[in-house]
Image (cartoon, rainbow, N blue to C red):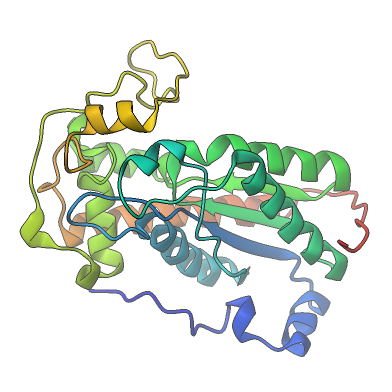
Length: 275
């Protein structure tokens, strides 16, 4: 099945009237999903908005599974090294933190209490997101959590990879397969090209494999490590079927977390309206 990115769904906040939002809150709906990604190069075969499309598609599926609303997507994240390639953009880490806090505090004024940020940009967005969620939790009592595709549906992800670590890098097999399922028309399958394994010395430090320092490379270093196309690893592994399996496993894990966390007692301290 070739899904299409669609913002016309009835769960998107921007498509609702304020009376519909109020009705959702009045029937006990205190949760909302915030899809957050990035606009940056993803090689010759994937769109610049890939990370945000992933967050949007997961948000749509998870919202249906949990009867939850979705906030308008955040299209920009923290990625200064991606400026190595034309068209890539970034915001400062503290800007992303502030944006997320402002969005959540605005919604808290109306009665929202549980915020689930689906991160499509993997580890680079995680530090500013974690700070935002921690500040919200400590200062308002709200539940704020980051749901990252890399850490949900892990058993299925491992099975699908069949031990091939060369599909997990930027714009490689897993990202490509997922985008093929989300909207195949945005994937240039004629540009698929496998390349040598990831050359960067700072691979995902959350993976328990080899020792890793937390190190952030410059745009110049990033381009040297990634090569002229901005991609290292196996791209041709990707299929629509594998992308669908990844998507469903990730979405199910996220939905299960949201349903479990709805029973967590909260002591809410409503913030003042932002000025």
